Each structure stands twice: as structure tokens, then as C-alpha cells.
Length: 263
Image (cartoon, rainbow, N blue to C red; front, side, top):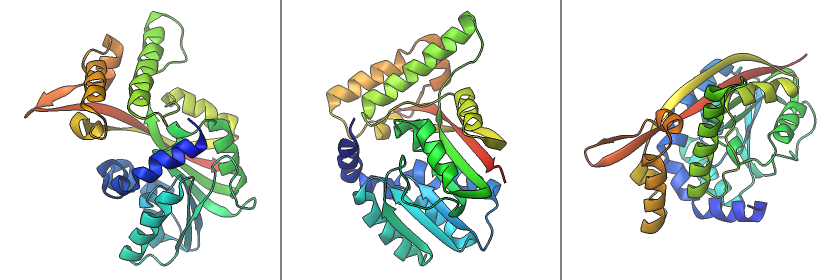
């Protein structure tokens, strides 16, 4: 999917992100802010800010927050939400994660939450995020992770195959989905970027299939439901499908990483 197609897709669905429980209220939001421990004089950058939930979570604790997103259509509701909350120290701008429009060592902390699985080049994202951090600064990343393993053997192969299955399932629902990394792949990528991981956690979240797939046609919803309910064993164990009160829920997992840039 091209950048223009991404802009069009997210612009068309921007209003939904304002009230999305996963983005607005997910457990990883408060946990990220708490682990970063922001200081009153800090300048913070939130990458792929969407409608601004993460930027606005940091705003009460710091001097200034810049929220950056590729999609101009996200900036309008993000700005409105900031006004509604009285956050006068937040500014939103359009920009590309692979070429951040900021000077080196501009920010004390950089955050990015539930977005990197849309990025075509994780290495480039991490290089740019690290570049704009001051020495000793903090990078906080939260993103969906899939099964995976560094090991060899049938069990490890099944885990990697399960990860591929979950990614294919997500991409069918959302063509802007590039790829979720495994937890191990994130650790490797962060180390390759020269960052020191100080905290690493996973957080599970349950999604309601009917809400998750609601924007699609009945035919596409049927295809997605079949993929979900007939997943191979390893993927099925990860997705943990449950049906209660007529609704179908499934599990996804987020990886949370707090890192330091060498000083």
C-alpha cells in the first residue's frame, strides 16, 4: 500500500480513532507513561500520533509535546481533542516517520504506540526516532506482537508459522498493515539501533470480532471469521477465540519496550 493510500484510508476512518477503546483507553497507554516517568521540563515527540491519545496522555506531565502523523485527516480531530481537554502545550503536524522533520537531539522522549505494524521499514523508523532523541533520552514503543522464535526445530517453526498466519489475518482486514514483529524481533531491532532496553513487557487485549470487522462487507466479514475460527493450532492458541452472549472475541498481544539512547 502506498503512502497516499494509507493517508486516504486513515483519513476516512479518523473519527473512529477518537473513540476507539484500544487507542484511547488501552492498558498500555497509562503503563507506557508511568514507565517513561516524564519530567516537567521535557519535550516529547509522539510518532504516528493518530488522533492524539498518546500525545495527550504525556501532555500534563511535560513542557511540550509534538504529535506527528502521516495523515492530515488525523490532525484535525487530534487538535480538537487537545482543545477539548485544555492541552495548550501540544502541537500536531504532518510528517513521515522515515524522515522526521526535526533536528538531531531535539526531544527528551519519543513515543510510538500501536502503529509500527503499519511502517514499511522498522529499522528506518528506529534510526529516525533515535536521531531526534537527545543523548540519554527515552524511546517508548508499544505495538502488537505475533508468535515467533529465535530457536530451531518444529516447535519454533510452528510459532513462526502462527505469526505469519496472524499477520495475514490482520492484513486481510486492513491492507495498510505491513507486519507485526515478534517480541524477539523487536528486541533484536532495538539492539541493532543502538538502544538499551530497560523495560520489556507484554500486555494482552481482547477484541470483539463484530466491532473489529464492522467496516467491511458481510462477505469480507465471513472470510475473516473463517480465518479466525479455523486457525491452525498454534495460531488458534495465540488468538484464543471465545464466544459468549452471541459475540466472538479474540486475543491480541502488545509488546511494550522502554529504551535509552546512549549518552
